[in-house]
Length: 148
Image 1 (cartoon, rainbow, N blue to C red):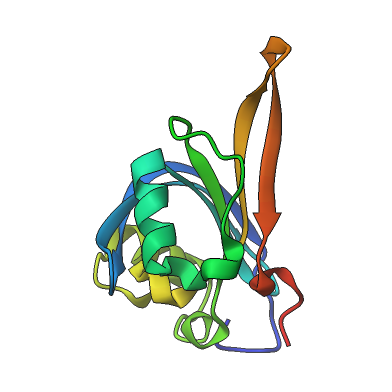
Image 2 (cartoon, rainbow, N blue to C red):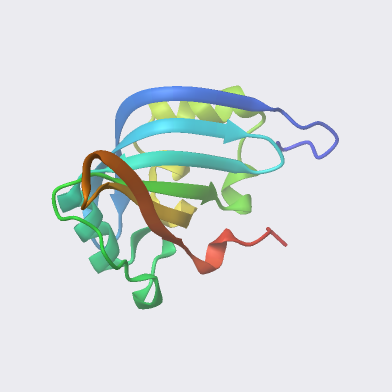
């Protein structure tokens, strides 16, 4: 990661609650679902409805008013897909170093919401006429495009 000649490819399935530090919202606890390290570092996290409201209200993960969700249920978790900012990625020698800091060090840069950009936000919700069926609703943010 610090060396541009090699690319670590790691996909870790994680089911671990992690507090992320937000300048405006304080600590927000998210369930880390997955981490993918390749040409870029992406993660998938789950937020409770209350945590999602705090994240959106404070603009954590670089969300803004244009990203306002429509149709989300107030009682269902929200999935947020994130991309780690490149200057933060460059701080780590390899994927193992990044993962160790992310999970093990609450003060490490990847544990700050400002280090990540939300690229997609979604929620599974019930289909009104089919109570046993669900559909995923959500939106992509301005950060969902390719990294330049």
